[in-house]
Length: 199
Image (cartoon, rainbow, N blue to C red; front, side, top):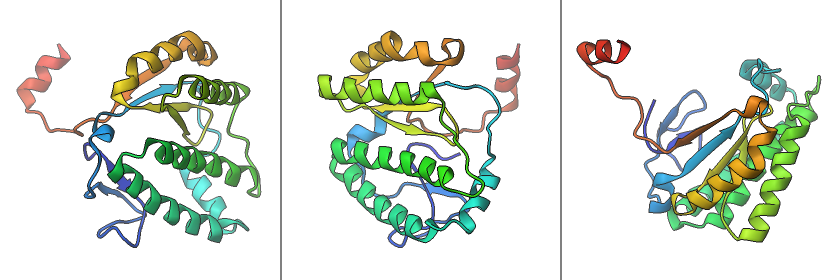
């Protein structure tokens, strides 16, 4: 697992990129993105309704697949520029558009799947309202299920985290959430250190 920022998916402007694995982000990136936070709201801790393999297979014959792939490549180019320049507004717009488009593709596949839960939508609505009122740059993305990732810059972490605790945790299964942030990736540790950690 690579550290800092990883790019996944074949892209014409990214040498070495692939649909099969992620590669370290080699583009210039604004400092604001090197310490970004990700709070994962566990709306539903159950098994995923659709595996990634099944989800990818559904896209093969999807009537919107070709246009969707073009859109994803265009969005990645725009995202690269936003991350170079530190454009948080455009970054947030693209991240959320990608998340919602993924779910739209699943909604319109055959068979179709509704991956969101009512609490997923409640969290999204509350976050959008919070952003309008506060002027802060928190945004959401979604995994292939009901859980919501809230992304936000380190400079805004206190206000956003307080909002999450006060307004969003109640929508999580058993109040469960995970706080994460951009890290340095996996590192090999020596055997004696790992034994010490296990004790």
